[in-house]
Image (cartoon, rainbow, N blue to C red):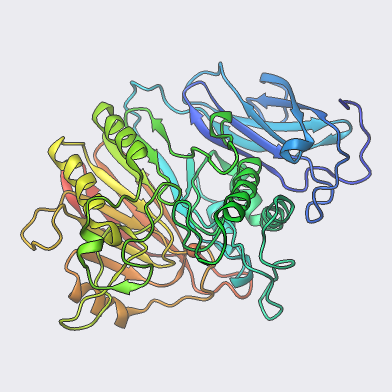
Length: 487
Ligand SMILES: [Fe+2]
């Protein structure tokens, strides 16, 4: 093990991050990578890394410190699970390896499990195709006063480089561990993404592109790929994900399996159930394209969460003491009819393709009176606010919760307000309250009385400098299901 190294090149090119906070600590993350785009550039040895947590930016009031190992087996990443800090406090943190010192990040402990916090401010985002644009949305997010950031997946895209793009992926479609490591490093060298990670703890879950487009359970999108090859690729993708994210060691992958679903309470104010709708789902029962609902989509044997995760979630929701019960997940729940007129067509890769699975979960939350269900969704590269119901086919079925869907950070390139499309979608689908096709993220202010979602957008991502515009805001009053436009 090396401890007093002198570095020719900065090993902290990927910045720092924190995640999965608790009342007495959080995860601190960094990775030693003097050559971030070329496999990391560290010799094949373990390195000792010192970490420090301070109450002040000058690191005079040290609250905690220790040593961790950066090993070649995990790409010289460092995950520190800090414990023993007081609840509901902010800290600064940094790492040191030999003569190199990392940038400084901020992290906070959550309020105690039995404390009703007055307020939580957090943002959620998804889908950040590097080739489709600049991370201006993160530049704005990093200026906000936030306690948490949720990332709902498509942190990277697996595709090969396109020489006509605004900025390029390097190489072919990624397959090996080294390919995935280099792709994450390409994204994480972005200064705005680094700044957003340094701002506060993140709660991350993946969608499909961290591995392979529209993947479902153990089945590849390209059906010619044999299952062994597919699982080897998935093992590489999962390992690189674990290495790059501020996750606890209980999430560490075992080959092609990795348990990412987990619960993070923010006192008794909000309970975040972070879900994985990719790894355990049955193959898309009715394909992964738009289609009318059919018997296959309604078949109760299909599942989007898998039995184990679904039962875990239901047990957790019954036990929850929180005022707002949040599902942080990937694909859209509301069954939006995409066809104008009497014809109907729904996206079968999303919850509508697993209709029985959705009705079972929402029905459970209604029948067990889980307080204030809020579903947060990514994946679809558009902003939506949707009323949730147990039976969407019955217009009189009461609203039981709200789904807030965030657009992409960049995926799809420059967006548009799309007012004409919004008119059609809201008239075809009475449960849709808002639709918008610009780029950005959503910031939320949560109190015991009210949830507010502000839809933050940027008008372009093909050049720097787009200002932040709050395009619309929606509020939900505690105990009264349904979002209303805030004026
Ligand atoms: Fe995406």
